[in-house]
Every structure is written in C-alpha cells, then in structure tokens.
Length: 115
Length: 116
Image (tube, rainbow over all chains, first blue to last red; front, side, top):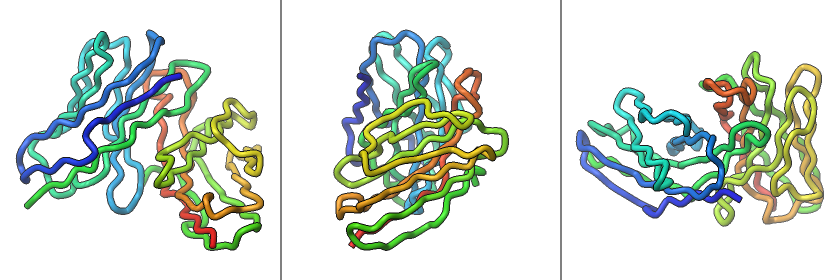
C-alpha cells in the first residue's frame, strides 16, 4: 500500500518570503501522479499543482513549483512571494496510474503567512 | 468554483439515523469519488464510481453505501449513524483515468455532518 508522509505539521513565514513544504511517499509503482491540494479555512479542497512521475521536468504553476525527486520519493512544494491568501492546510497526495485512481493523502501541513 | 456541487452543505442528525449526501460532478466527468475527512482519520478514500459502475472501494463501512445514477450524479447513504461518523464528506470528480490531466480530481465544497 502507498503511504504519504508530511513531516511538518505547522509552518509559518513572513509575507513575500519563499517557503518549502516537504512530502515523501512510498510506492513500488513506476508510473503514478502526485498532487498538492490546498485547504483554506473555508475547508474547500483546491488543486495547487500536479506532477506526472514519468516526466522529469518539475511542474510549475505561477508562484508554485515542485521539486520532484523520483529516486528519493520526494515531492516538495515551493511557494514564492507568499501571500496572505496562501494561509491554509496543504495536503500532498499520491495516485496510482490506471485501475486505481484513489488519492492517498498525507496528514497535511498548516501554513500561516504572517503580515 | 470547481464545478462539483454537493448538497446539503451542513447536516445535523441523531445517532441511529440515516442520511443521504448528494454530489453532481463537473460536466463531462465520468468518475466520482467520495472521501471522508475527520480529525482522527484525516482524509480517507471511501469509494469510486465510473460511468455508473463501482470501480474501487476503500475504507467504507458496511453501514455506508453509494451509487451513481445515469445522469452521473452520485449519492452516499450513511445509515445507523454513530457519533464517530461526524466528519466532512467530500465528493470529487475526474474525466477518466487516461492521464494528460484527465485523472485530476476536482473537489466539491463538502458536506459537514454532525451526529449528536
């Protein structure tokens, strides 16, 4: 079974600074997908970024980028120029490729952006 | 707005009762997933339907059941409710499992269930 570990329960950073959230996972699969979801106080789950394991290039979405290290099974999220609206719980999630599309989530990192 | 809708937003009920949660996927999405988010268990996958058929089952209790209708909306039925069933229940949808972004799941706003 796949497991996803987020070792930082809470983090805080000053507005406009850069912050990196860590995620490691365990799988024997070679093809899979990785995601970061954001859950603000409204409790809505919002997709931040996705990465396909067979792609070596790290995904980027505006101020959000990932550092995907397949051999190390590491998938960290970097938020640049952090904004107050980035305050939220961030969940790392794993999905196998084909046949079993359930998301396996980590326990989350609570990120607070300080004005 | 993800395009996934869930009703009701909040539900308060008593132990032993039965409730039905409803989900409408994004237009064109064939897969519907149900997840439970509780304080002690985190986010847990319950069940997936694809184009009307059950495709995968997770840690779903026997007291819980789901179905997906021909118009692709889905319902999650929770019966003989216990205090521990209090949680936020999410529905998510995706196009398919074919990759190229089609596997990406988009979440509804959730139904907050409180069992008293």
